[in-house]
Image 1 (cartoon, rainbow, N blue to C red):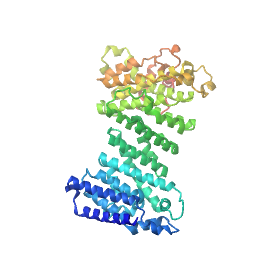
Image 2 (cartoon, rainbow, N blue to C red):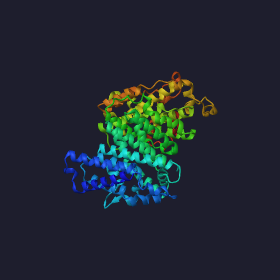
Image 3 (cartoon, rainbow, N blue to C red):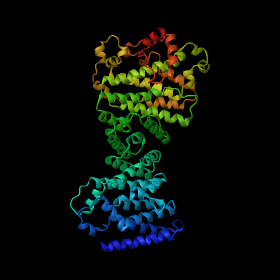
Image 4 (cartoon, rainbow, N blue to C red):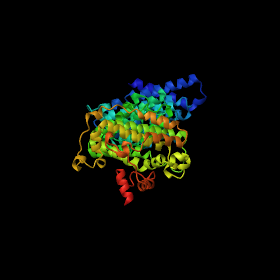
Length: 560
């Protein structure tokens, strides 16, 4: 052991001389490789060598402060970190990914060097700042930094869980040291790198290279260790994890992200409610891959994590229905106005249409088990189509539509003037979803869950929460999503979109009239009700007003 320590001290001195006198950027390739070999050897020795083990053998109290004092007394690990920091600053960008594992070798054993007062050495950036710079750098640097940090977190986690086996054991001293305030400070400071880890996960979704995938896996391993150590902030991480599970092409990475997603969700179920940011991120990722519409919604592997969270994390009817309502509100929001812009650029159109597909796939795949949950979906779709889509369809179906050009007919219609392609896509998809779920549940069940559409049923029969029939769970994946979205994306004008919507949503459709298919009757809304719907129309948010459930109620409100 003494010979190894002497050799390590000699190598540290040689490395120090090489770093001080040499400019790594101006060195030849052979000289750079020799310098890296020295750095790797020195850092590996610092990881495995047991410094001052003879002095520890007879000691009784080996608390964290004693361990910290021994490090500074030998001064070898801190000197190595200082030399590696100087080498990092002077090395070219191509050499830096090979230097980062050296920091990991030293800090896996001597993690107390990451304390706050050790973050700078002789005015230079310390290891924590170097890792932060690397996580924001090139792909090779991000991967190497994530690998080193994952190893450091794993060492911290293993040391914190390891119980001291006997007196005088060096590993026991390290394990005991992790429970001191100094080691707790190290863990807290390393947890400040979570935003950088989220940036790595966000970038890997659009980078399909093996290097980016490896870096994302190491980042997920580090985040998992942070979760087990209790220093993870779930609110900022859950959207990134959910976006990966719904958009990344690698099944292994989706499985790792889904496992961490479920772990974090079980500790903090409330963080699952704002799913809008995750859907937007996943939609943006899909839009950059060039995939065709209809390639995601029919396949359940993209929604496995979200469905498991719905069935396992939410252990009460109230929380499940709340999450379901949040998802439905995202679907309803697609039929809102876009603001002052009347034309949507293609770069903005594709993410919106992909969000439509992800929402449809998620709602269809959620394990809805009771009639009350199905009723929430159907009644929300009925109200949204009645108040937001029906005013446009009324004018399109009128006789004047065939006497005048459609553009001039609806130029003064605010709803039509501000509608985007996502409005038409959302309206047609909701109508198709309504008919799809009613068909899967059966006419009797669909009539019962739509309490406002079945006045002849007793109130207690309508309010009874029954399990859905077996046929509902045997339904086939929807095929209409890709067809509708492809045609919306290929439309060249607003009039084409409106004509397509008129074809897909007839005035006597089930979503407007309700009830079983055989009992549907063609009903038209009076002019007063149509005017009322136009006023409420597209500018209404789902949370601002409680809309009427049926067309008869809308007409009654207008007449009153």
